Amino acid sequence: MSLLVGTRKGLFSLERRVGGWEIDTVDFLGEPVSAAVVGHDGAAYAALGTGHFGSHLWRRDPGGTWLEVGAPAFPIRPDDATDVSPMTQEPWPWTVQLMWTLENGPVERPDELWCGTIPGGLFRSADRGASWDLVRTLWDMPERAEWFGGGYDWPGIHSISIDPRSPDTVLIGVSCGGAWITDDAGATWAPTHGMRNEYMPPGEEYTTVVQDPHRLARCAAEPDVVWNQHHNGCFRSVDGGRNWTEITERPPSVFGFAAVAHPTNPNVAWFVPAVKDEMRIPVDGRLVVSRTTDGGATFEAFGNGLPTEAAYDLVYRHSLDVDATGEVLAMGTTTGSLWISETAGQSWTTVSNHLPPIHFTRFIG
Amino acid sequence: MPKVSFTSNLRRHVDCPAASVEGGTVAECLGAYFSIHPQVRTYVLDEQGKIRRHVAVFVGGEQVRDLAEQSDLVHDTTEITVMQALSGG
Image 1 (spheres, one colour):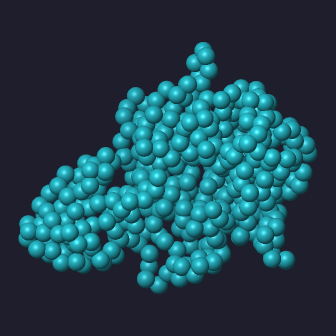
Image 2 (image 1 turned 180 degrees about the vertical axis):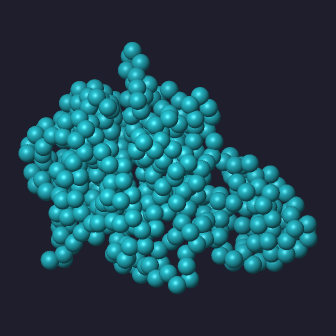
C-alpha cells in the first residue's frame, strides 16, 4: 500500500516500510498538484495547476514516466451567454481555474475518468484523459446561475461519487451549489434535500441550490450511506444522498471540511472539526479527529499523537483519507503537517511537519 | 520573420523552442507557432483564446494590450516574448 500526498509544491509518494511511513518519491517538485487518482488499470493521473500557465493533466502508466495528456476545457463562451455571479454580477469565466477533484469511472468502464473543476464544471473522459467532455446537462441547468463561490471566487465541484451498484448514478457536491444526483448517466440532474444553511436569510435555509456541502463521502460497501461535512454542520444520508439528515451534536464542533466514510461499515466515519466558518482553526488550538461508530448518534474526539495546544492546522476537504481496510488513515494540513493513523483514527504518528501546504491525501492499493 | 520565444520557466513544463514564424499580428504569429508546437497553446492561451491571466506577452519590449484578440501588429524583425507575470509565494 502506498499514499499520494498532493501539495502546493509537488506530489509526494509515501510507502509503508518496517520503521513506518516514509517519503519515497517526489514528482512535479515546485508545482501545485491539486488532485490525483490511480485508475483501475494502475495508471496514475496528476492534475497540475501551474499557476501562471493553466491547469494540465499528466498520466503515468504502470512502469512508465509522466506524460501530459488532455485536460478538461470549457467550450467557447457564446456571445449571448448570460451566466453571471449572483454575488458580483461578473460573467462566469468559461476557463478551468482548478481541477479540484479527479475520480475513476466505474469498474465496468476502466478508461473513464471524471473531473470536477472551479468554476463548477463536471467533465468526463472516456479515453484515459486523452480528451474530455463537459457535462452540458449540468452546466446548462438554469439553477447554475444561483451557485456562488465559497472560499474561492467561483463555485466548484469537489465531490464526485459513482454508485458502485449502478454506474449511471452519480452524486456530486458543489461549493456553494448543493448536491446533485443523476440516475441516467448525466442526462438529467435532480437536487438533493435536507441540508440546512444557517447563513441564509430566514425562509431560505433549506434552499437546495445554494447549500455548501464541503465534502461528500460514500460507504463503498453500503452505497446508500453517504456522509456530508457541510459548511455549518454534518449530515448523513441513507438513500444515496437524495435526502440528508442533520447531525447537530459532534463535539468539539460541527464545522470542518473533510469527511471520510468507512469502506465497509456504514456506521463509521471520520471528520476533523474546526471552530467555525469565520475561525478556521482547531477548537482551543487542539487538533482532533472525530469518529462515529454508531451512524452519527455519538462521536469520539481523538487527539493522541496530534498537537494538544497552539495548533492552527486546518485539514481541507480532500486531505483526510482512509485505506481499503478502514484501519489506516492519512491526514494532511494547510500548514504542511502529515499524520498517519494505523488504529482507525484513535492515535496518530507524525510523518512530517515540514511539507508544503497539503491539498489532498489518497491511499493507493 | 517575427521571432517567438518563451521564458525558461515555461520550458520547465513544455518543450517550447524559439522559432521564426509568419504573421502580421501577435495572434497570427502565435497561431503559426502553435501549429508547429500545438502542445504549447494551452500554456499561453485559455480556452477562450485569451492570454492567460498570469502570462505576459511582449512585442519588442512593449506588453501586448489586446489580451483577448492579440491584434497588436508586428513586423518582420519583431521579437515576441512570452513571459510570466510574477505572482504567488
